[in-house]
Length: 306
Ligand code: ZN
Image 1 (tube, rainbow, N blue to C red):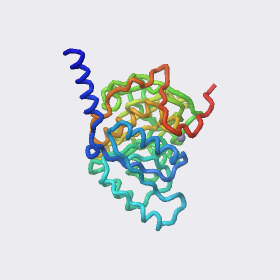
Image 2: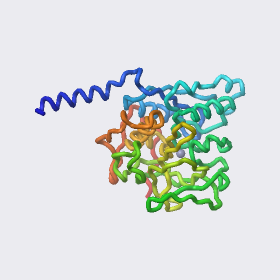
Image 3: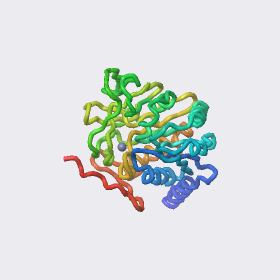
Image 4: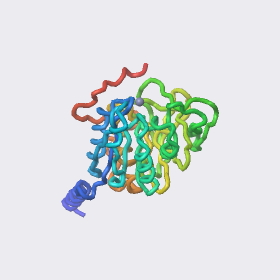
């Protein structure tokens, strides 16, 4: 093949990959509205992460504010069945029972769910939700919620000893280590990469059924390699759980973008055909790679850990 043909082929392939028509884009619903994090600042980053891949169209559904009357909640009832995937940027009051039942039915029937950072703090009392996310933190979670997980020499350990579920130290950059390089979400990525400043969640606890650990980071608190990228099955549904993404500066990590894009495509389709190329600017074990997005980061990262 001559150079001109190669260039032409490259141009055609590029055109194909960028020309997913609007109708073929996977429809994703992002839920926000309550969070102990700045959801109004981070939802636009999640939206950009998905839309910039060309694979998704997104809509946002914002719940009533904390303390809203029941009448306001009656108005909030997303039609989950309209979406290939649902992303939660929500950590707050319980959803109305009708919404919980509808979401559970959507997932059991083959829906896709992505839990981002503090979304796994939500709903400690909602049994099915905890089965979906596998492990969660805070909200009085403890050994009765289930084990906390860590990986040693490629083997998953489930620690059932007494203790609270959910902890983190000061924010800092940390190494994310791939534990399963065969999965469509992690395939081809460097086995270790430096993640931008973030909270490093530790001792999350939950039922941890039908769970596969894709990546871990070494906890400051336990010195164990604890999961931060996980996949689960729930009924016919698929779940991608990332503990990363405390703030906009954490989400703008190219590693976060890539794994979030792939995770969302995977829960929607079972593969990463549209998002699975490894970007040239992916972080390495030595160097973070942070994207520039207009108006971000709006939350200044804390001073680096000494
Ligand atoms: Zn956080």
